[in-house]
Image (cartoon, rainbow, N blue to C red; front, side):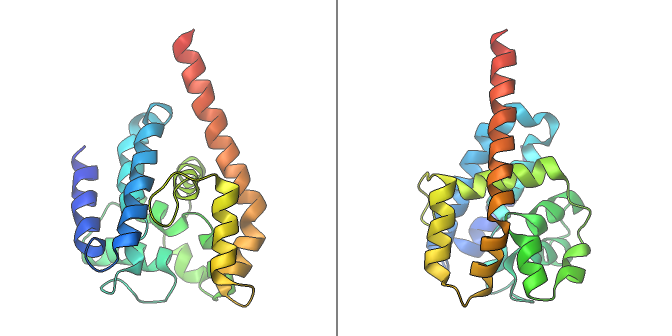
Length: 187
């Protein structure tokens, strides 16, 4: 768990004091990632590292484009020299492609591609089951909260509205894989 420990320390240094709610959310996303470990095999630690760092793009030191997924991935790549796969998972998490399209940042997002579908599904599941303050939440409720928080004139509202069916499909795929993993253990 060396990578996850390193990522945890980095995210804590960037978020805990200046963005405590974001830090609480990131800790829950990390906890959710740890619960998915049996279904991820050798990628479990990578997901844990991505989960705890997925929102570092909100930290003042990381802000560049204004799209936190890309900003976080760039910070991880350019400032701390993180593993390219970690940067990719952070870059593509949740509604990033839709938001990047809205902001004319698809080319910037492509710096981190191609996305790994199973890991993007997993990070999205972890993100959408974690409230903004670190509580467990139903993914549909989480998406409704995001839409309410941003309102129809905001880029995040438009991106999440467009992405919603795919985001919920990602959650369903992760739940299905986790169920299959648990079922195979019992057999």
